Length: 437
Image (tube, rainbow, N blue to C red; front, top):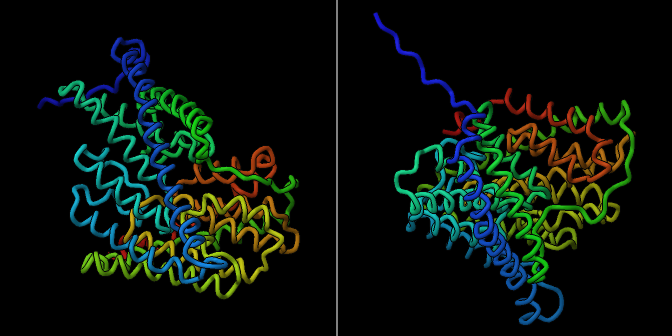
């Protein structure tokens, strides 16, 4: 009897020394420029549309403050346009965010890119509660893979994979506050390791660095913004204590249960969406608008805190943390969580920023507990919610720690405990993808 051995894994040193790999690095650097510019343009279009619809237009049409009912028709329109895009354009508008980041399905084909971009644009610009990171990853990877296929139709699959990863790196180069963090997110989502990590990481990091420079340059040139996650005010640094480490266990448990509830609700609603996508998605959009309206009427706070990804509202929430009562913060977290679940079930976007905002709201609410301070409470809340929703413990830890800047180092122990607790517990709970079908 004869046996066949599995093909040997490529030697990364030999591959890196090859002419083809050097060419791949050059191509990654070149592709980083237009892909990051397209990503910047997409984010700028989303931002400008949000400002037009929810700020400029009501100021022109309505005397006095923006009425609480204003988001309802716009969210209904968001549902209608997103549903029509998903139903009639190729590519299903991209992957459903209810399942989190999806791996193993490759970058979208060229014919799918228009639907991915349009579904994300209508979702994000008109107020649904999702972020831009997943569509940008898909668009960046799809554009890079398309370029490789057009340039060389017989390009090996590995080359297309490397270039698609580099395109994704470039598209979110500064979105999460650091090119390194964006690259880390993509690598942990894809489960890249071993020799493949060495081969994919370098072109991706190169494209990401080029993309970061393009984002900075376009911000300086246009003045539209850098679209990078960051806090305008960082809470004072405090050393870890036994009390805060104990609270980290509780925060991790709360984050896991809330994340599991949100995801379970989103997945349980998907069969309803599939029965009549246009009608149900439009209704879900209106429901999100009604949640935002109710929050404004009950709290006198702006409905915009409930809408959108939460990326722009997060710095304001932290800066004005002392102005919120615990009741308002819990109501905000609940309204955002419900809107998040509805958005996950029917719209298109990414899951990162809403989970960070909900975690931050819970952290601010918990900062008044005995032995707690704002900095560790924020880190715990953000880390726990991200770990529960994303199921990416390393990325979740980095998101919470790096957001707090230089003071993040002091809260790392509490964040690690909260993330570990949330990650273990959310994997112990029943898998929503199996219980909801």
